[in-house]
Amino acid sequence: MPRSRINENFIDKTFSIVANILLRIIPTTSGEKRAFTYYRDGMSAQSEGNYAEALQNYYEAMRLEIDPYDRSYILYNIGLIHTSNGEHTKALEYYFRALERNPFLPQAFNNMAVICHYRGEQAIRQGDSEVAESWFNQAAEYWKQAIALTPGNYIEAQNWLKITGRFE
Amino acid sequence: MAWSLTLPPPSSLSSSSSPSFPTFHHHHHSLFFNGVVAFTRLRHRRNSNTLSHVPSVGKEDTDLRVSSLQEQQLGEDDDGDDEPTPQDIEYVAQIKRVLELLRKNRDMLFGEVKLTIMIEDPREVERRRLLGIEDLDGPTREDLVDALDEINEGKIPKDRASLQMLAEELASWPNLEDAVPKKKPSKSLYAKATDTGIDPELAAKKLNIDWDSAAEIEETNADDETEVPSVVGYGALYLVSAFPIIIGISVVLILFYNSLQ
Image 1 (spheres, rainbow over the protein chains, first blue to last red):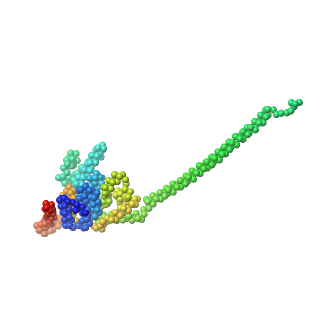
Image 2: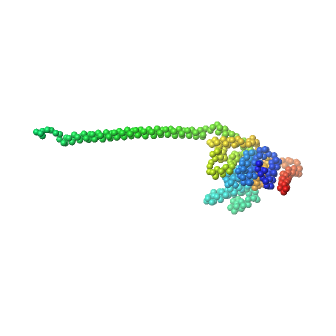
Image 3: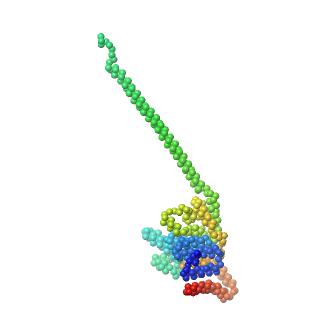
C-alpha cells in the first residue's frame, strides 16, 4: 500500500491531495514526479519518526531528481534526520551541500549554529576554552546569516548574540 | 761362595718396573684420553657437523620458504597495487562516465553524489553497533564512499568488492540522459512542501534578484518596450495566480464537509 493512503488525519490527507493537484498542474517530467512522490513519502515517514524508511525514500528521490534547486530540499531533510540522530558531522555535511545549491535556507543555518553551539558547550566541559570560543564564533556567523534571511525570527539567537557581543 | 750368585739390586728392579708402569699408565691414560679425545672429537665433529648441517639445512629451507612466501606476498602486493585488472579499469571508467553525465545533465556535483551514496539504513548501523560486528556480507556505505573518493582523486581503489558494487550502483542510476529543464524556483514543489523557515515566495524573489541579475535587467528593458495595457497584463497574472488558491480552498472545504459526515 502506498504511504500516501496510510495517512488518515485531516491535515495529512489535505496535504496529500493538494500535493497531488500541484503535481498534476505544474509541468514536470515523469522522473521528477516520481522523485517528488518519493520525497513526499519520505517527509511523511520522517514526521512519524520512521527515519529508516524516510532515508530510503530520500535516496530514491536524490537519484531521480534532476533539478539542483529541488535536490537542496532533499539534502536539507536528510540533514534533519542526522541531526535528530545526533550525527552532527553528517548533518553538517548535508546542510553544507543543501546551502550550496540553495543559500536561502535560514533553518539550515540555524541548525548548523545550534550544532556549533552545542559543540562549544562540550568543549567548555572538557576544559578547552579556545576550541569552545571557535565553535561559538562559528555559531554566531551561522546565526547572523539565518537572521539576515529572516530578521523577525530566531529571537533567542539574537539575544545570545547581543549578550555575548557577537552581533556585529 | 753361595754369595757369588749375582742378583739384580732392588734399585734396578724399581727403576726397571717404574718405567714400564708409567709407560703403561701413560699409554693407558693416553689411549683413554686419546680415545676420549678422539671420541669427543668424533662426537664433536659429528655433533658439529650435525648441528651445523641440520640447522643450516633447516635454515636454508626456512629461508627459502620465507623467501618464497615473501616473494609470493610481494608478487601479490605488486599485482594488487601496480597492475589493476582490466575489469577494474573498466569499472573506474564506467563510474567516471556516470559522474560526468550527472554533472553535465543534472548539474550534480561530486559532493551530492557522494552524499547520496552515503545514505545508509540506520537500522543496519544500529544492529552492527549493538552486535559489535562488522558486516562480512559486503562493503559498507562508507567503503563505497571511500572508493568513490579514490576514483575522484584519480586512483584505482584496492577494494575490488567496493569498486564493483559502486560501479553497479552508479550504472543503475535512473534517467542519466535526462537534462535539467529550465524552470523558475518559485514553481518548485519541494519549496512549497518544505518548511525551511522562510516564505517560498520570498525566497523565490530573492533567488530571482540574486541569481538572475541579468534577467532582471532584461525584464526591465522588456517592460519598457511592452505596449500592452497594464490592466490586461496584471489581470491575467492575478487570474492565473488565483486558480491555485481557489482550488486549495475548495479542496479544504470539501474535505472538511466530508469529515463532518
